Length: 78
Image 1: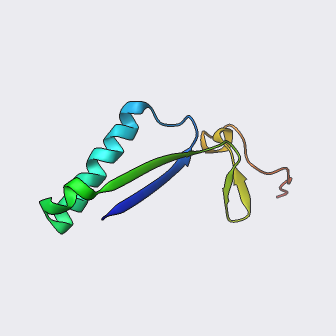
Image 2 (image 1 turned 90 degrees about the vertical axis):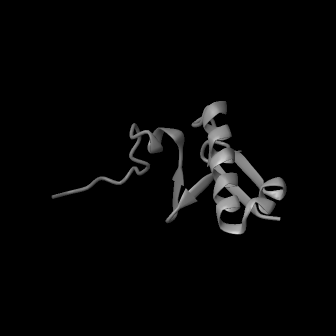
C-alpha cells in the first residue's frame, strides 16, 4: 500500500488545499504503480502545532515562515 505523510504548519492550508494534496498524491502513485494502487493509497496531511518543528537548529513558527519574524535574536554587524 503506497503511503505519503505530509507534515505542514498548523493553520497554513485550507481544507481545499489538503484535498488537493490527497488527490494529486494519489494520482502520482497511480501513475507510477498503475491504477491498482489508487484504491490502497493512503495520504495523511498532518498539521504540526506552531513552533513544534525546526530545521537546522531553528524552531520554525508560522510568523517566521510568513516572513514576519527573523527567528533569531542575534544582531548582525557589518
